[in-house]
Length: 454
Image (cartoon, rainbow, N blue to C red; front, top):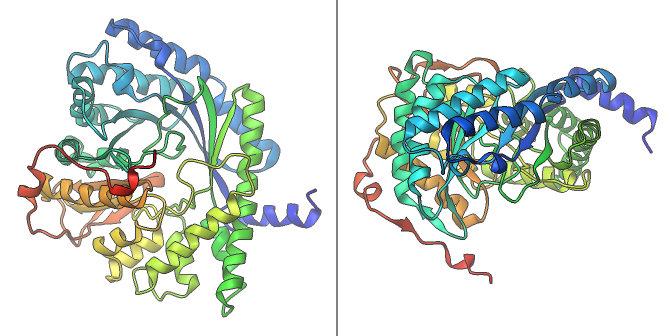
């Protein structure tokens, strides 16, 4: 039963502590749209998305009004387009026509992003998948709402280094293609290891082939709520600290479960998962970095940061998993630099570096996220950074990702502006020693020994 105190407490979280449902993401399978004729394929894709998602935005708004819970984004994820377009696309430009169709469909139904312009190539690459990857710079430059991802590694298959090398080149080409907007295209491109099939958060969302024809996934977020709760246990021991995080994560996730259930019932579409990740925004008081500083760090990046983040991530999962029938996606703590004011401040004062961020990714949900680097950074260096992050995910049996933004024409000491939820970011220095010989090797890094579990 919910008592009046809990209702009042939830209202306080929403009004003063930035509690919100970050996204309702409608997953739509496009497998039944596959056609060898490119024109017919595009028509089928547009028709299905606009039909299935026609009530998504209005349903979200109705739930917001009735329950008083902010739902920041309504989004769509789709079957990886490299699979959907394989029978019809004979070159990268063919895939770009699908990107334009997706963008038009997203505009028609009123969502701000559609994810799934993706390829899954952790063990090898078909010609179709290579075409899609090579089309990404043009696709992201010519559209507004498309988000793209490439899964290049997994614990079971190892790391496809040919794909890693290609992705380094594609990130750099995407930066060049969108250099008039501070290389914004790269903010919509994620390279994954162990990508989950049910992630509702952009830019890495896609609908896995094991999913239903349509499904509702919800992402909740409450860094401000967690920080406020921790202010009440200053000076207490780790037991009280952990209990407070768990209880708060439970309450936050219950809000997501409520919204997911309502959206599922009203749209007649099955409920998939709640992703209980702590996803920050540039808004003051909505920062994962500030939670870590409230735990006891002078600045995020100081010694102890990785341990504090590991504890936070674990307690969020322990509390949240009891609050929902199905928890999935990424579920933990995000550390995107441009989207977290505390992270931005830490970079500016010198406490947070690329190397420390990489260490933190060993224990958090995602990886090197929304990090602006000098535009002169070589493609091979970007590939090397991707390879490092993929290795962390592969060996630790977890999802890791890279969303680097080489801002063309800018260097360390300057700032890149992305706008909206994507925020802004100071340019972080990158180790300039080369890794060209390593990256130029062909083939894949084998899966680790502990991957053999059959």
